[in-house]
Image (tube, rainbow, N blue to C red; front, side, top):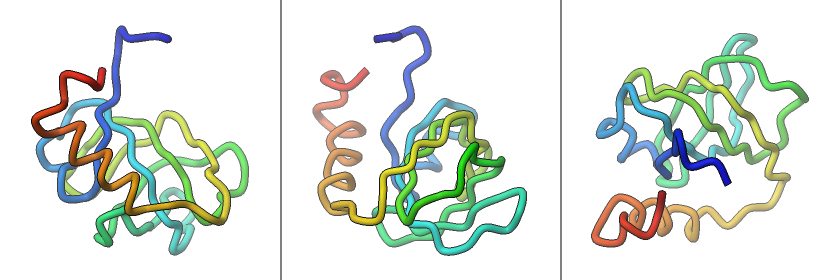
Length: 106
């Protein structure tokens, strides 16, 4: 595993703490606007992911990229997570990765 440039687990609420840093987030795709995808974060807030996925997006996407505003990510890596995903568990991981247990996450 490459640990030279880790990506912090975030939801929309936590994104503002990591502007300019590499992050990873899961979104539920709401619409594809050509150069960006509008989605709902695991904490039910809207996020904009800029860039073009290499394949058509499924309902849920994991995106790794740079947080460029408190509501948007410039995507580097897109991973389709299918059409069924447990958003509450992922949201709990985001809270742990940014709280008292962040030392357990890269």
